[in-house]
Amino acid sequence: MNASSDVAAVEMPAHDQYGLGLLILCHIVTSCISLIFVVEYFRGLLPLAANSRDLIFAAVAGVIPCVLCSIVFTIRRFSFGYILGFYFYTLILGYLWLVPFSTFPYNHRAAAISAASSGIAFLIPALFVNAPLPRRAVLTARRLDALLAAILVLSMGVLAIGATFRFQFVSLADMYKFRDEIELPRWLQYGIGLISGALLPFAYTCFVQLRRYLLAALCLLLLVLFYPISLTKVALLAPGWLLFLTLLSFYLEARIAVVLTLLLPILAGVLIVLLYRCGLVSEKSFIYFGTVNFRMIAMPSSALDFYNDFFATHPLTHFCHITTLKLVMSCPYKDQLSVYMADNYHVGYFNASLFATEGIASVGLAFAPLSALACGLIIGLGNRASAGLPPRFVLLSSGLLVQMFMNVPLTVALITNGAAVLFLLWYIAPRDLLGDAKRASP
Image (cartoon, rainbow, N blue to C red; front, side, top):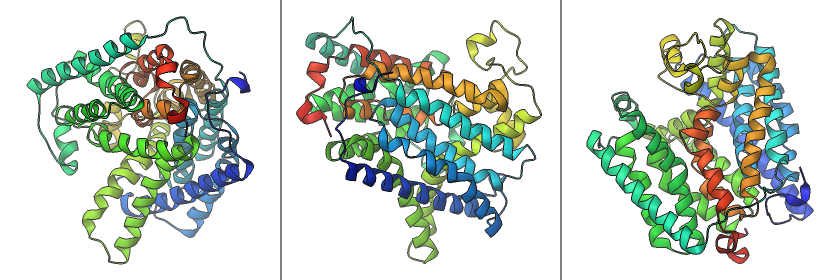
């Protein structure tokens, strides 16, 4: 660990660091207000008690440690671990707010302490392990062009094959109903996950850096065409999300951009609810709040609540939920954990982040922080592989992956969604071609 080897970032004057701290505080307040509305409008879907003054005061007391810990995001430089760390920070913040409202009978205090400790344990290596790896393989300009062309051709081929199994445009409201009917071969699911999570975002970012904007637009088109095949929010929202990240990265310092990627969408949902309560917008506007504030932000936090309750009365997995390990060790769970969540709680099939799967489910509350520490060390490898790349490049190329990390185990994100491949691509990416300091620095 070496502060001088941090991923390149623009040094912030002291007054700008105060501004970043204030922005993070605004994010915390906005997130808590959003969760108040989530409890009010969606507690019929989640095991939550109604809002009350006592519970809200308990929730405020529970998130105070998060407020104090947020200072680390004002003093650390930008890195991949910074992006993912801030997203996981928001996830843990959400759980600490929601746990006083939980109607599940497990030990809430022990679970809250474990969650907070796990978040801190993850952040230590994710933010501080960033010394560059020795680079023994670097792409030339010709090989980079060949790689980008291969990614486009592979993406088109997988799209064509996937379309033979299913290609149907449905609305967001009907997405979950039709998605349960999808039956794609396992190899095709892996291919779609790898291309959508790592390859196309990497190619898009390269084309943006190289100013090949038509090819960058083609990457966005290919990404959205995976939606009729997979029926996932990530595929549908990918072009808009990457354009949003691109706009922020062109005009703002990287860490400010990271905070705004969460603050602005959450704030928009809060404003929609306030306008609805004033009678200024229709009930249809709740599609946004339900999609973003509830499903994309609050649900990953609430997943910790479900996993804590389930594994308080069921045997731990000891990592046997990982498919390859299940082949060589006995496991009390034949199906994926999402199946058991659906069968026991009737809220649909949902996976959860590393804090729930590699933590709560695998080793229990007491050892969950150690598991989070190990996961943070793996993310530190991503920091080291991306060292020397412009902040914008890291932010855009990992823009879809961080969304997936919020909802799937670390092992799934690394293998199925392509995080390990992205780490390799970062490692071999030519800094001299993609790291134009004048254009790439925020």
